[in-house]
Length: 289
Ligand code: NAY
Image 1 (tube, rainbow, N blue to C red):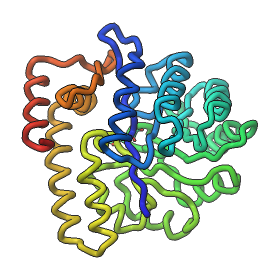
Image 2 (cartoon, rainbow, N blue to C red):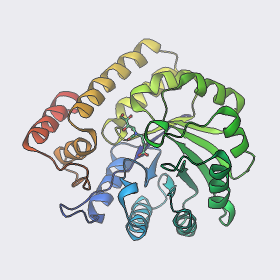
Image 3 (cartoon, rainbow, N blue to C red):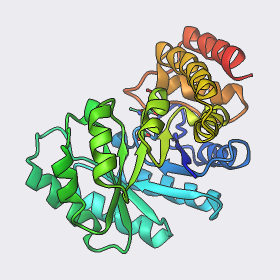
Image 4 (cartoon, rainbow, N blue to C red):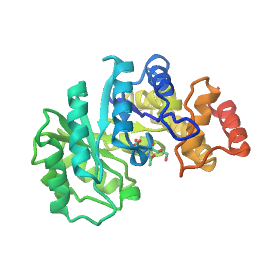
């Protein structure tokens, strides 16, 4: 059975501080209404790369407490500060997270040996399993099949969160590593990823659209490709509208429409304008009601 994960958002107050009550509400909504299989905590959607270590810890703890063992949780601990990544890996492992993940180190054009060292270090002192977070469009780091193979030489590295539109590479990786966990990261490309036999998907829009995405996965599994295509089209109408309305604040605005206190995005991400608020209302009415 393929698994669907929401990439958990972080609710912020208007002044940029973390709003833990909002995080709890989003975790609850994902469990009780979305019937989600799991959550990816501390990723791009969680705005983690703008947060302090203490804020990240607060988010990991809040999500873990609220989920209370009901779903699978993956903690994204990757950071350009390797000491922070290691400390967070230990922190979440001690909390009870059964999987961690780390973004490829970015910005400095690290050599592959340095990237391998980073991953080996993150898992070295923890009894946990790691999923490589590969998102070349944001990091500029595009690992090859051979490089994934070298990273997988470490038995604690169990898979890839594959947020990439390169389907040739996805096919190569899937077939070369049939036992590794591959989770697709672009929600608008779920269907082609399913066709290449990913194990599931992680995404921001599943916070709002899990029901449709699950139906698409089920239709695909049942061999009803026409239905799966229609559901992907419906999802992409929603995703296109979200992107056009500025996706990160809009995801939160739409959640607010649903009565969930998702709060603000963290500056320098934009705060909602009246036009964005009106856009989000329309998105909710048109695609989600
Ligand atoms: C995360 O939060 O780390 C993710 O899961 C990333 C996946 C999302 N990518 C980004 C860059 O936010 O869900 C996707 C993405 O928002 C969606 O496909 C719309 O493009």
